Length: 343
Ligand SMILES: Nc1nc2c(c(=O)[nH]1)N[C@H]1C(S)=C(S)[C@@H](COP(=O)(O)O)O[C@H]1N2
Ligand SMILES: [Mo]
Image (cartoon, rainbow, N blue to C red; front, side):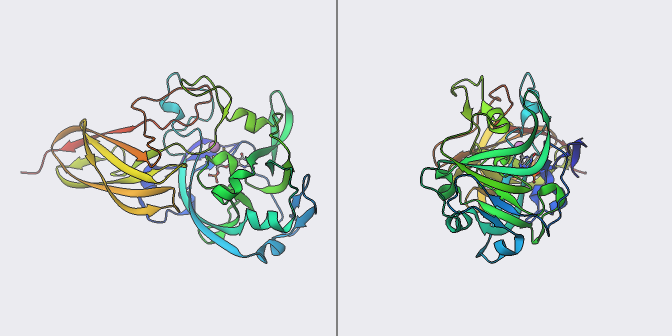
């Protein structure tokens, strides 16, 4: 079951146990909105290509459907996932560890649309605009907008997605079209997409790209943009809070990184680390599902999970604080009570 963190704007946190399913259903996917969900009529909806395109173009959904279609399984994680584990807890939506989801997204490649529209050579950054808007300080009433360096198009191969798990996007996930940028924290995957502009440099005036920056974090220069997902592992089975019976248990979970494939997943049982078995790749290149057999004995136990990616990056033992509460990839620790075996 999802947990509602706020109603307007709608913010729903997923239950990590629901990510144990091979294909979790959409109604278990986390929802993160900054503004009210806009109502959009798909018939009159258009994607406008504005500044920076040699041929300004307006795309209907049918026109987009004429391009080659693509489908990818993608793991999306909110940059604020794990914020409440930081101390002091930074301001912002109070996510536990469930601001993460997996779904199959289909649509067309962003690169195909850009190629059709003759993107000017001098452009360095794309700016994506959503149909949702609201009032923020100090900017006043603004739409949701996020940027993407053009160099990232070739690396991340973003999708303009119109379906999620084979169904039209639900209203809260961006109907009728959203951007999906695999490997990056979720704020770049602009929902209810209506417009793309290409600009020469970054746009320091944009509210959200300005907000999503690392500030006050040790070892990270202030103003570093929040971009790729840091390496992280999550326990999906057994469910948190479950009382286990003594005997064999299979511990299961996910591990991912926005920068490189996962090299290792280690599971700590009461402080002793064991290598987990990586059972299958997950979400096109960015992650894996892992498992480890454990014989639970009566009493209280602590299970920790830690991943390392191919760049050598791993997870810190304690949360590393920053002002926005972004990118917290602390090693996760879950306590279980195990009952005595029945005599
Ligand atoms: N237009 C628009 N796009 C948006 C947002 C938003 O508020 N408005 N939130 C972003 C953030 S912060 C995240 S984490 C993801 C969440 O996508 P989901 O709600 O489909 O899980 O959408 C991103 N795209
Ligand atoms: Mo987010």
